[in-house]
Length: 120
Image (cartoon, rainbow, N blue to C red; front, side):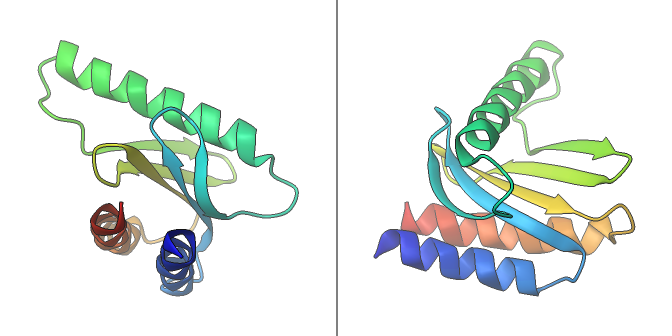
C-alpha cells in the first residue's frame, strides 16, 4: 500500500516534465523503497550509490560549514542526477536529460520529497 502511494508520487513527478527520465526513493542505508527506473538499471546498485553520495554530501556540507544539506546534484555529459532528502530516512533521486530546465525539476522534486516524507 505505502509503496503504491510512493510510486504514484513518482509517476506524477516523472509526468511533470518530459525531461525527467527516472526516479526512485531509497532508504538512507541504500535499500530501494520504490522506483520508476528503466529495466536496464540495477536497483540495488542505484540504491547503494545514491545513499553513499547523499551521506558524503551530508558530511561535506557539515564539515565545510554549509549547514544542513538540501540536495546533491551530479552533472554528466548525458544528463543530471538530483538527490534530496525525503524525510529523515529516505532519499529521492531524479534523473533528468541534459537539456532539462533544472529550476522546474528542483521545484517538482522538492514537492514530491515532501509528499513522500509524509508517507514515511
